[in-house]
Length: 356
Ligand SMILES: O=C(O)CCC(=O)C(=O)O
Ligand SMILES: [Fe+2]
Image (tube, rainbow, N blue to C red; front, top):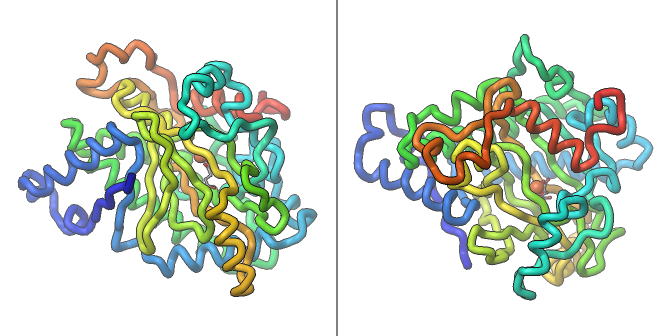
């Protein structure tokens, strides 16, 4: 199945008053429908160009190619790895430790079954906080100072500029989704203000791990609100639609890919569910490795993942009419920060250090 591409240009050009026009309302309903029915959306945002994406990936390839000892200088386990580098072999895919998920594996048809994780992920990651942080918060450690690797003078500017652009794209989608769901336009975006948004590119070493079936990120959902990715230079990301179908993500040049996380599931009382996904080496990845070798390009698979979050001190609970839904009781009110901490300890990023 091909995922539809929604062009945000018309929505972005319009002022508030024009939002009542039929074609814009239809576009908003289309966004909310796709998020509800599939949990996955391709978008085109004129503010996020293919060149921006390329510059960012070039820099991250250079970083991930550095020796492990250098990269580990950027490791902050005491901050739950929520800034700086997370080496390979640390983050544990939720499905490795979640018995409910393991039960569902058994019921899945063979062609849609994920690769069953046997240990932690083989991917590296860099976490960079984007956007303002709250001066007064109950969740200080999730909102700590950034880490900048030595020898990358362009780091801050590059991370911030690409990060802000992708957050703007998420905000537009969040507004459109809210309108489409019949909520106030800012129902989601007002909760995203000063959220601990993370630009969190992954780096996977295809010169070392290139056997089919190697798992870079085992089957999991994302714990945040919405996740957005630019186009990666290597295929490998697979998602599951709400109907259980497994789909290879192909992001057209100049487009971005958005998937639902657990926080939007909470806020919509289960109307949207968090999209499951995995990153693995497949025959398509191997074809791309061969081509990259011929062209003398980097063999690090970099993702330009950004986790857009609800503010740590804001409350997660079904919004507006979603509070009346039959599933709402599965989503009791909890602060977003508390929820994130619970999830982080399950996936091994919190709990080994002084913050547990
Ligand atoms: O590497 C990717 O393409 C996505 C990784 C992922 O799922 C994650 O970072 O949560
Ligand atoms: Fe993910």
